[in-house]
Each structure stands twice: as C-alpha cells, then as structure tokens.
Image (tube, rainbow, N blue to C red; front, side, top):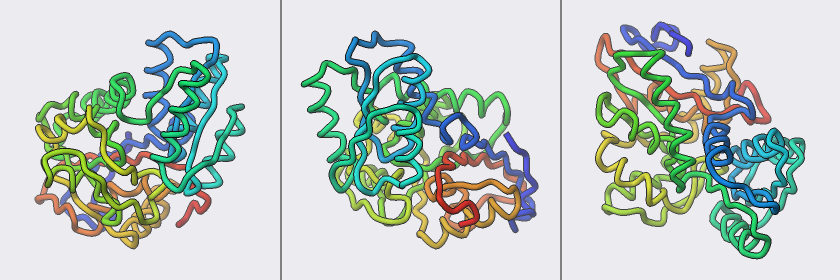
Length: 286
C-alpha cells in the first residue's frame, strides 16, 4: 500500500491509498485466485487448465508450477506477447486460439472434457472470487476509513470478491474502458449481456459478459461504473510512471484513469482507494 498526497497527481485536497497489486508474483492480483483454486480443490493427474486474456493464465501457470502440477493455458490472439512469454516461462503449455477470451474459454472447456484436467475459471468461480476478495480484506486493514474504492472491471471476479468483503461499508466504484462497458451494460439491462470488447485494455478488461456469480454482488454493492477512454488510460499510465515509477499495463491503470480524467470526482478531503492491478506491459512509460 502506498499513501500519496493527491496533489502529486493534480488532485488537491484528496488523500490517495494505492494498492500496488502489480507487484504480486506474476504481475497482477490474479495469483490470489489461482492459489485459492488449487489449494482448496482436488487436482487430478491431468493437472489444470485455464482460459485467459493473459494475466490469469500467467497466475495459473505460476501457481501450478509451484505446486508441481501439469498446466495448459488457452489465450486469444489479443493476448500480449509479454503475457504469453511469461506463461511459457512458467512451464505451461500455451495454446493461442480465437479472437477474444470467450473463444479461448470454449477451447479450454473442450480440453477439460477430453483430458480430465481441472478448469480454473478466470472470474466466474467461487474459489476465484474468494481469492480476489482477499484484496478487500487487506484494503480494509491497510487503509481503514476509505470513502471510496476504485476497481477496474473485466469479468468481475476482482470487484465481485471485494464487494462481498465490504458489503456496502464503503462506496465501491467500478471502472471500465468505454470500448468495453461490460458491467455498465449489465447493470443497465439487469443481467449480464454481451458487450463490445475493444480498446487498448482488451486483453484484460473485455470479456463478452461479466460473471453470473459476481453480478448480484455488483447490483447490491457497486455504487456505479465509471467509463474511461483509451487516452485517459494512457495518461494514467504515464502519471503513475512519472510520480511513482510504477509501470502498469493499460488495464492496471484504468482505475487511476477514472480519477485523473474526472470520470470520478472526489469531494474535498475524501480518502480514495485505487487498485493498481497489473504490470504486464511492453512499454513501462506508456
């Protein structure tokens, strides 16, 4: 956790608590959900399988390696070269297939049925949300008294787990690229619906739909969703690098982008938590 004077980012009178999940093993919070899955479920001889836009695959590959289990990861073609390199580097079998996450998910499900491998879902699984929810527990311990917490949303396992932990005790703001408004559209419709999957954070924040498990939690506990542009995300990447020398991928900077672009406007004196969630980028200074 890093405590920052908002003035450092041009946000006078705002206290910021930045949780740097990008410093986790594998460069994102995803390791939490991967370990929660593999330490609480029985792993068959065939090992584990996962579909991912990149970061979940890196985390599952790392975790399986630590536990000495066979692992196969399916990713779509939009996955970044950095993430694919890390998956291979942890010893996983990597399969690149389809244009987006859902294509990779379908292929991983076929492999699970064929091989008997244990599927580890990136977001729509109770064990995954349990692991990601530990971020909320730590936020509450390390930065008590938050007025608001900004969290980037892809499939929703992270914000769903955090929402379950806080249960309305602080204002929870989801942040999505305006080119991939998955949770925003689901909340408008009253249920998960298909959404566009574009923008520079498409490898981490652009599934076709948010998870079924997280959605009731979002309906109850997510105050609203702020949509940010690609330009705002890149500005946030540069600001995090300039002020903190923190190198983020686009999805990892999305929550900060909502603050810096004014899509979330804190009140004077507000204590705002920001989750900086991913570091697997080819361009550290954006």
